[in-house]
Image (cartoon, rainbow, N blue to C red; front, side, top):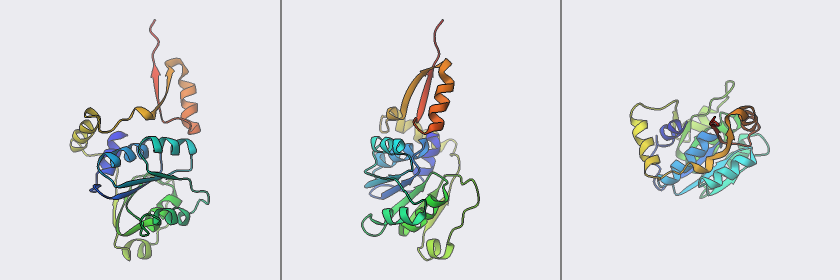
Length: 199
């Protein structure tokens, strides 16, 4: 998953850019740290889960937002507050239809939208108003590039430029795997380390 975040986040030049990360699951949280380490001027993040928003702050988000209406308009208005124009780059990591809509509406004219989240069903997009007339660059990305992504990933981790320790939220004995799965399903965990017990 960290390789996925490296590939999707570094697909654009981030130095001095404002970045919106929509969806703070593990890949979105990785993306926040990567964007900050890559010189983004401001990173803002949104999610519907308070626990994940707290982790987003730990990973370097300058501002977080919890949508309440379930519409893209609400997220777009929040993103548009960035310098009054919208953010330069939006990384859509959730696949939620409202977040996808908010990404296109909240990015600045001439900006970039990277789609990485997987929607569960087809999503309606106003191609004319929200893409063409805004002169957007849109990337739909999946996976990672071998071996280019691996080299970047290794560099970010070995040098300590990106610290993933805050995302290891629980350490549980291996026999507690059921509890670990419950924590992940509840959204109250990010990464769980299962520790085998020595006999």
